[in-house]
Structure formats: structure tokens, C-alpha cells
Image (cartoon, rainbow, N blue to C red):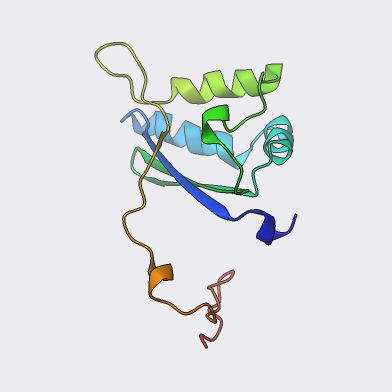
Length: 134
């Protein structure tokens, strides 16, 4: 997959349960992600997905094609049995409100971007080293 095909960044956030055991279990699942989940994300297609946490807050970065519509979901619909099972397990780790509902991944709004101020000749940070800026 060429990175040029994945021209749009979507940022989502959600809260896990405050229980440190639940947070660790969520992270452990992602350290050993099921192959069916990876196959599904490639087929959707998701160019790249990253999930970060700070305590119980999660932030997901999705790199997708320009025509990707989040309303259609992150996974292929209808989900396979394994993807549905994964979703149910991951959903059980989310913060539960007094109403009995669980928190859901919510798209964040971009409020500022350096792109407006930087020239198109720049090089981006790659890997763990910084390339020279032109």
C-alpha cells in the first residue's frame, strides 16, 4: 500500500473503565491482536491505525483514503464472527455510564494544523529519526 493512497487522518477518542486491571487487559489484547482483526482492517482498507493511551483515555489515529466514510464503520460490515467477538470484548472494557450505556469512539475535531504555515517542500519526521527540514 502506498502512503499516498491514504490521504486523510481521522482522530477518535474514548474512555476505558478506570480500573487499572481493565486498562492492562485492553493493552494486553492489543499486544496480541487476533490475525482476523488485522486482515479485516487491511480489507476495509485502513492504511494505518494507531491507538495511544493516557490512563484510561484512548486516542486512535486512522490514516485512510480520501473517500473513507467513518459512518460505514472501521470494520467490514457485516462483521465476521471473530471481528464481532473482538468488538464485544473491546466494548466491555469501555467506561460504563450510570445509564448503563458504554462510552463509544467519538471523532475529534481538528482545531489547528501547521500545514497552513509550512511550505510544501518540508520533509516529515519518519521512524525514530528526524530528517533534515528544507
